[in-house]
Amino acid sequence: MRHVFDHKNVNPIKALTVSWLLSLLLLPVVGAIVWSMYGSYTEIATREFRLQRLVGDIVHLNEVLTSSARMAATTGELKWKDRYKEIEPKLDNAILAIAMIARDSYEHTYAAKTKSAYLELIQMEDLALTLVEAGRLDEATKIAFGEEYEKWKELY
Image (cartoon, rainbow, N blue to C red):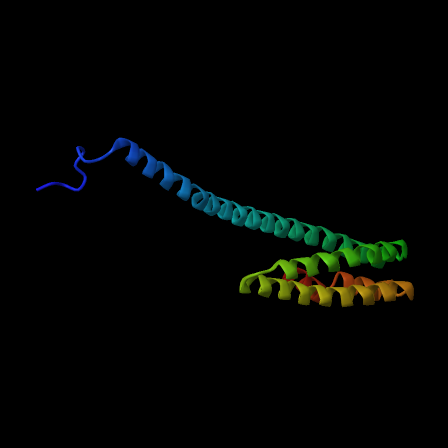
């Protein structure tokens, strides 16, 4: 009985040629798989980096807004309102960007909670700034440093 892979029946040139042709056929397939994996990895890494950066921007810009509203309420100086109005659109854009990048339900829920708390804070800060303009600093201070404000700030 003869074996199919009996070394006496195998032509080394044919075997080498077949293995070389198989390698040539498989090389593009393996390359495509590797390229696809690399593309997915860089997309995920870029997205995660962008999310982290936006979260950092949101935290920073929110602190600037809070400080501006509180400084206006404390000092009565309207330059803080100007600073507030300069920063507010930047924070709006960062929150919008993070909501657009969010993919899974956790990220969407997180973005929605952040936006909700942000809107509450904006309303309170706008009221405080309006009171500053009217010269009612005590009322503005109560809003900017009050328990309700802190509750929304913590949620945010």
